[in-house]
Length: 294
Image 1 (cartoon, helix red, strand yellow):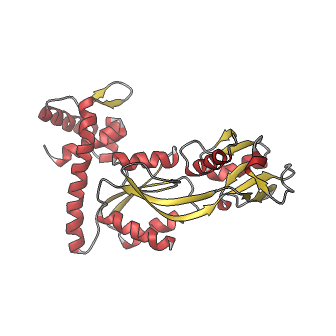
Image 2 (cartoon, helix red, strand yellow):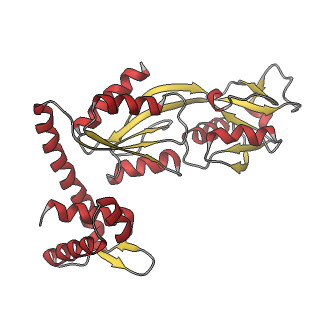
Image 3 (cartoon, one colour):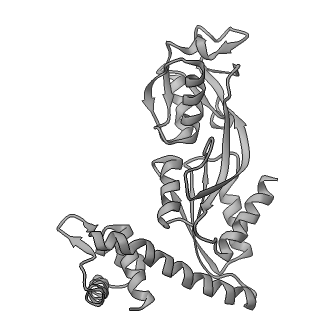
C-alpha cells in the first residue's frame, strides 16, 4: 500500500467520478482504475460502487476515507517540515471562501500570499451552500481553511477566529412605507416580504436570530446566493433585505436604514479543523489574514 493509492482513492471519492479524478490527477482514467483495484485487492474489500452515472462509497470506503486523508495530511506535514528547513514552503493549500466577502479583499490577500510563497499551489473553492458547506469541507478534510460567517458557537471539531464584523442595514425601495421613518424596529417589519440568502449563510442566520429574539415571524419570498444581486431585487420592488453596506454600491432607487434595538452584527472569521494541525502553508496564510484584518 502506497500513498499514491490513497491519493487516487481520495480523488475518486471527492470527485465521485473516475473521469474527473483522472483530470485532477493529470493521469489517464485507466491508470486511476488500476490503482483503485490494486488498493481494493490489498484491503480485501470493495471501496467504491460504480454505475453508469456516478461513483459512490461503500461502507468500507466511507470508513477508509478519513484515514486516507489523514495519511496524506501527515505526508504533507513531513514535506512541510523539510521545506521550512530548506527555506521555502511547498504543497497545496485548499481555501474555502464565500461568494462575496467584502470585509477582506480576497484576491489581494491570495495574490500577496502567492508572491511570498510561490511554491504553494493554491486551490480556491466557493460553496453554493455558504458557510455551512465550507464547514463541511473542513470537517471532511477537503479544505484546509475557510473564510466563513459563523454567528455564535462553531460546530464541534471546528475552530473559528473572528477577524471582522459589519453591521447589516435594512435596504428599502424608494417610496416604501418605512422610508420616511426616523427609526425602524424589527416589529415594523413583521408583514414584509424579504429577499435573503438560503439557510446556512451567515447573514441569514444573523437576521433569523434577530427576528426570533423579537418573537416576530419573517417571510422570505426570494432566496439568492449572490450577495450583489440582493439589492437589485429590492430595487425592483420584490421585497426588502438586510445586507452589509458594501453589498449595495449602487444606491439609486434605494434607502438604507439601521434597525433599532436589534443585534445585526455580521461576523467574518477564518476557520480551521480543530482535529488536524494546520500545515505550514496554512499557518502562513492564517498569519497574513490576521495582519490584513488588523
